[in-house]
Amino acid sequence: MSGAATQSQRRTTAGNGRDLWVPAPARIVALKDENFNTKTFTMEFTDERLRAEYRFEPGQFNMVYVPKIGEAAISISSDPHRPQQMGHTIRLVGTVTRAMGRMKVGDVVGLRGPFGTGWPMQRLDGHDVVIMGGGIGLAPLRPVIYWLLQHRKRCGRVVLFYGCRFPEDRLFAEELQGWEKGGELDVLVTVDNATAGWAGPVGVVTQLLRRVKVTGERTIVLVCGPRILNRVASWNFLQLHVPAEQVYVSLERNMNCGFGLCGHCQYGSKFVCRDGPVFCYADIANIFAKEEV
Ligand SMILES: Cc1cc2nc3c(=O)[nH]c(=O)nc-3n(C[C@H](O)[C@H](O)[C@H](O)COP(=O)(O)OP(=O)(O)OC[C@H]3O[C@@H](n4cnc5c(N)ncnc54)[C@H](O)[C@@H]3O)c2cc1C
Ligand code: FES
Image (cartoon, rainbow, N blue to C red; front, side, top):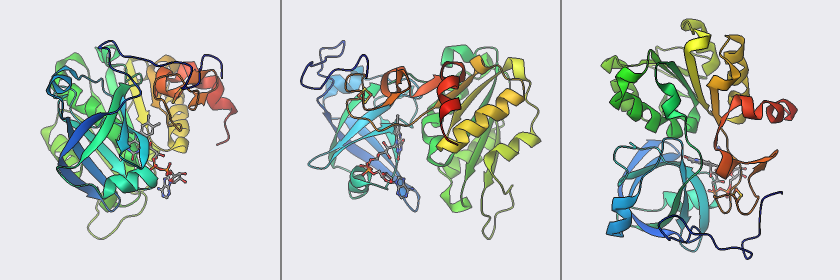
C-alpha cells in the first residue's frame, strides 16, 4: 500500500479548509424512481456558502453518508453547470444504499466530495465522442452528456450506446428519448431481454458497435459499466483502431477515505479514488491484462 497512511496518522483538509473526513449535511430536495431498485436523489448542501462554492467535474463522485449506517461512494449524475443541485443515482443493493432507499424528500444525509479524476472533457475538443454505458454505469456518464449538449460545437459526432437487462431497467428513460429526438447525439439502446412493447435491439451493448462506423484515430471513447463490459468494450475499441490513449474507463473499488489516504481502493500501483475512477486505458492496460475476465 505504498503512498497510503492510516486514518489516525493524518487529518486532511481541502483547499477551502474543510476536513475531507467530515461529511457536510445535505438535504434531499427531489427523488425519482428510475427502475425497480434504483432511485435518483437530488441533494443540496444545507450550508449556503458550501452550496455556492461547490463544483464538480463529470465523472467525479461523492461519499454519501447515511447517519448511523455508513458511507458509500456514489457518482454525481447531474448537470455540472448546476452544481448546487447534486444528483446521485443509487442502486439499492447493500447496507448504505438500502438505507438511502428508505429516505424521503426533506431528509438530511452527509456528503464528502467531490473526489476523483473525472472524464477528460478538455480532450474531447475536435474529436468524435463515443460513450458506452451498461446498467448503473450510465449515471457517471450523464454529466458528460449535459456538458456535451452545452458545448456541442466543440466536438464532432457524438454517439451514446447504452445497454441494460430489461427495457424497464433503463435509467433516465425520458431523457434518453429526448436526447434521441433532439438529434444532437445518436442514441442506441439495447436490452439483454426484450419484454412486451420493446422494438429496439436485443443483445449485449458491444454488439451495437456493428451499427455505427467508428473512425479510430479521431474518436475518444468513454466507458462505464460492469467489470466485464469495461474490459470487453475497451478491447473492442482497440480493435477498431482507437488508440489506447483515447479510451477512458471508469472503475469501481471499495472505498473508505475517498482521497488517497487509506489504501482501500488500491488497483495495482494506483488508487481508484485519487488516480481514477476514470482511467485512460493506456495507463491501466497492464493491470487489466492480469485480471481474470
Ligand atoms: C467511484 C465509484 C462510484 C460509484 N457510483 C455509484 C453510483 O453512482 N450508484 C451506485 O448505485 N453505486 C455506485 N458505486 C457503487 C457503490 O459505492 C457500492 O455498491 C457500495 O458498496 C454500496 O454500498 P452499500 O453499503 O449499499 O453496499 P454493501 O453493504 O457494501 O454491499 C455491497 C454488496 O452488495 C452486493 N451487490 C452488489 N450489487 C448487487 C446486486 N445487483 N444485487 C445483489 N447484490 C449486489 C455485493 O455482493 C456487495 O458485496 C460506486 C462506486 C465507486 C467506487
Ligand atoms: S485510498 Fe482510501 S479510498 Fe482510496
